[in-house]
Image (cartoon, rainbow, N blue to C red):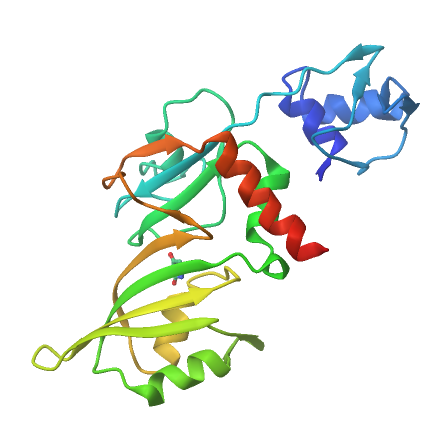
Length: 241
Ligand code: URA
């Protein structure tokens, strides 16, 4: 669900501020009824009319990107660094779903569908986000158990729903861990691994739900297929039943 004024502004009819004025003055109908209040939420199926003319909703697009290192996950950067949106050749107002750090690589979704972005990010929807971390230290069960039990990050308990030790390099004293989470707090995986004395050297997101990076080299992207988008929506609908 998205705010009515945002949907009107995104359709290119007018700015957000003018959209608010149009609503206040009774120019806007949702599903046949005039709406005067701000903040009314609409979804992709709501019929919105401005002065009797049905709003053409921007076609929804969904991209999967293999994010390279050294790119910011935002739509614009005040330090003029390259952003993930710069990589995608699409003039629409697309934005990243969640965040990967500047030095984190791997699977990132981008879209102009706010409802989809919210669905994918909300922890209650339990969408798997699977990361592979190279860490300093030889990891053992005593590091991994607390990750699954829960780690306190600034007063909030976060858990790895799965955590697997992929390999250990006893000489270099490093380990490779696979860790699955459902939430997406800032620097969450790095902070969780720091808390169990395994500082992250390298981090990559390899999977979101059933989506993998198969066929995508670093910096490459493709559109999700209609089937993939509906499968992702279905995952959420099934969980919410
Ligand atoms: N957790 C992190 O610490 N960094 C990321 O980029 C993603 C998850």
